[in-house]
Amino acid sequence: MGWWFAIDLWKRVILALGLGIITGLALRSGLGAEDAGALATVWIKPWGDLFLNLIRMLIVPLIFTTLVAGVIALGDPKKLGSLGVFTIGLYFATTAIAVTIGLIMGTLFQPGRGLSAETFSGADTSSVEAKRSAAEAAGGLTERLIGIVPTNPIAAMANGDVLPIIFFAILFGVGILMAGEVSRGVGAWFEGASEAMIKVTMIVMETAPFGVFALMSWVMASQGLGVLQNLGLLAVALYLSCILHIAITYSGIIKGLLRLPMVPFLRGVTDAQAVAFSTASSSATLPVTITCAEENLGIDKSVAGSVLPLGATINMDGTAIYVGIVSLFGAQALGLEVSLGMYVLVALTATLVSIGAAAIPSAGLLLSAIALEQVGIPETQALLIIGFILPFDRLLDMMRTLTNVTGDAAVATAVAKWEGELDEDVFRAPDRV
Image (cartoon, rainbow, N blue to C red):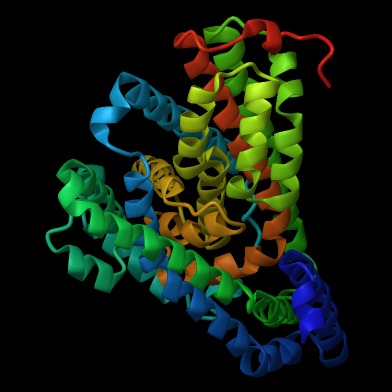
């Protein structure tokens, strides 16, 4: 089996995707749509469900440990000072703008419209309607926001109430930082637990090719090729959102706030963007990002060495865009109307979960289940939606990561400029390639 693991995981997933499409269409052609769908549901789909259960197993511990570790990575609050507060504030601002752009594009492109609800909920959609009725009965936006504060964090974890878990994880991480030396052991434990959960996630993702094969075979057998059009719209909405975010938000920072030319900035981060696009990992790209920042953009080492690692931890603009679009994709596929209050909750959720998104491929998709619940989609259907998108996630993740890395560099440039640590001669050098 060494040859199998020698192949990059994303290539194995693409192979499984192709085989799944061929298998499902062959069943549909040979048996007819109805019989093929029934056979695939009984004999093939359960293997995909097993993979989705593995993903479900990861969500709560992955969110809690990575969020606490991410807050701890900020360092001693006393040492952060105004520079740290400004950096974090700018990261949060760009993330809020990113998810807004994603929600707008998801609304305009309607990537989930036209899909059959049975793709994600079988013949019975009553559970979705029950969830929606429960959400409406729970009250308006104010009541739901109040519900973010858990009265019992342990119960919230047991029930999978993700927003209260996020709130408590961030608060707990801040508490560890404030406790200082006495809590060093607790902080080290959570950092270790976060790394362990990332490894567990990578182990689970090794089963992705088999889950993708099963799920895609079932979808093709029951729904046919028409569903691929919706995934194409999803990809277009994401790529266009990321391009707009770079052109509007990051250009606004570089040209509008800093009064610097945008072309030298883009030239300077090209190497980092290329590595980000090919690896789909902000962590793997970090050394290249730091090198580009120092050598091409003229950012001092003191700024590059602090702002960029922080960005790789908490600045996930591409992920925020994606989470917003996927939440609308799910609601549109199931025919659910998204209210203004739900848009606000999705935006808040996407901003928060992007902080806890591990800097590894496909982490953003796993966390999208949280936002799907905010538009009234139960966990079972949310995981089916994730499984449906997963075979194509590598292509989407590449653009998300490129956006994340570009945002890290833009914020680092802004911090360096305002701190007097930017060499503009290096930044504007015309002969840099």
